[in-house]
Image (tube, rainbow, N blue to C red; front, top):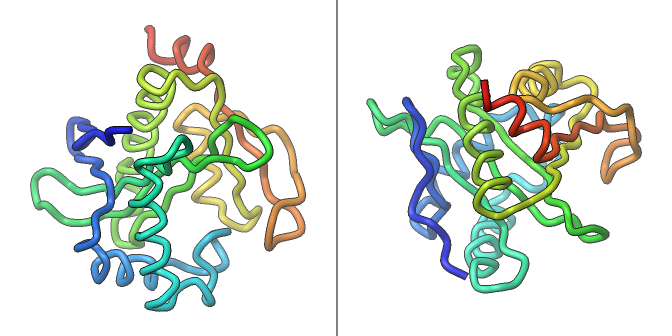
Length: 181
């Protein structure tokens, strides 16, 4: 499968992660508050784990279940702001959405803009029917971003490392309704 070069919004470029992004990505995830993310808990913020993650993402590009993992770059400054992606769920054909933004860039609408573009790619190019997200209940900013990007809160669910995660979903029909105004 060919992974696209980038997705573009008015202010952002979303581009697939590459091998030479290692140092910058490691620095980015080390700045994230571990309690706010299901994926980047302290034991996953090591050199070895980040290297393995990047290699796994890149090697998935040639499989039937690729990981769509994008770095979010501000066009004007070319600065790395954060990441977003769509990862396969093992027990279903749906993809889960993950995202994170460096703390100094919060509150500017960057993540909402990036997620809307990611959803557009998922629904209109990949032809997905649903995208889900699992968010720790204490990560208020992340669940507000999910809602503002068009996802619906469906309740709490047991998920991975945490007892209860907030479960969000957006389907293709709702996405099309939201974007056809």
